[in-house]
Image 1 (cartoon, rainbow, N blue to C red):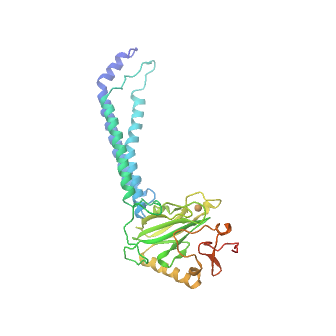
Image 2: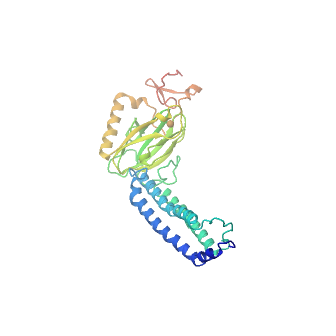
Image 3: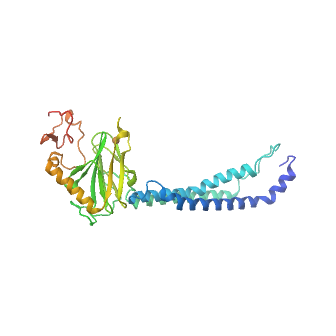
Length: 328
Ligand SMILES: [Cu+2]
């Protein structure tokens, strides 16, 4: 502070220091409150992935909470940046250093307490939000640590608290869905009942795929020979798209199909109807029995024993009728 502008700087700085902090705090508080209100009341209802299922609602809530937590931090950084440029900018001809701030106990204590609170808050909030919705819609492997509450039953009826089991089978390049509580029938659409605990069993017949009905807030890897369990509960009726979210070959981008959340009675009618049709047509008898994983189609070609059922090689061998059948 020994330049030609010393008198001006001293005049401006000495009484002004505490006012800087207060000014910054007031501006920060006003901007932060405005940002938090905007995020919560305007942005939050439109954030992905929407509110179609319990897991989607939790994810939307998590994103809103993270945005609300981050906004005051971002606003402080930007505000301090702009304030420093405007107010503390070096005037032409002033080559002196600013006053040293190391050793300032208040700033150090504020920094340590502030960062500690933010990190601990994110840790606790993230952990709770992972456990409460039983895995937050992600695949938890074959034996989930966190289970959704619901009865395990061999059949499913509307209005009960029975878990609906749906097996998701990925293969190049389509998803199919098997319903073990409806005779193991298989569908190319993923229909689900509303307000019902759903247990997805995700697997693959060939390479690694990823089951991603993003409006349901569910994403689970589909690995061959692995039974990957994910939970959700649909809360709104309507249609959704299922996409593959793991680069799985040349037609990966075309690997998607659709599903619908129906009323429990409409779902039961649909599922029973598909089951009856597949029973009549012989499809159920021709398919491999329901299992948590199936052998990939390459196995028979490696010389493994296969079982032939009604013209389709099934059992532990082919699961799908090969386009170019191999005679065992
Ligand atoms: Cu895929």
